[in-house]
Image (cartoon, rainbow, N blue to C red):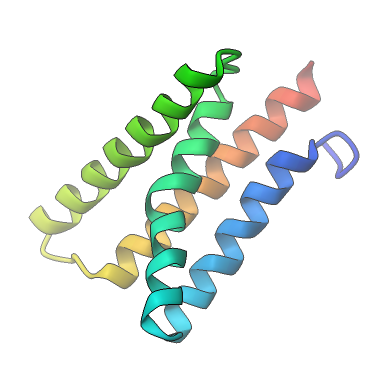
Amino acid sequence: MNARTVSRPTMAIALTAVVLSVVSLLGLPTPIQAVAALLVLVLLPGQALTRLMRVTDLGLGALLVLALGLASLTAVSTAMFYLSVWSWQACLVTMGAITILACIARARQEAAS
């Protein structure tokens, strides 16, 4: 698998997750940090996980982005809470990692087809 076999949207989602995770952790002004955190916590993981399913319907895809993003955030937050390790920084890094791992899985799908 090389960079030529990975689609631009897959690369863009992965790079955006990395950049926004770092930017959110650096401590920007609150409105910018809130938007970046929302993207990393809900929308980017949901988009990356939805792309694994190859959904063609636009409405269903948008619904899955929100549903999968919120479901994964709930699962991660609940697990961290029960393990007594919850913090917004750890949750942000974990959701960024989930996004990157889903993008790697999508890149492998693209390389295989």
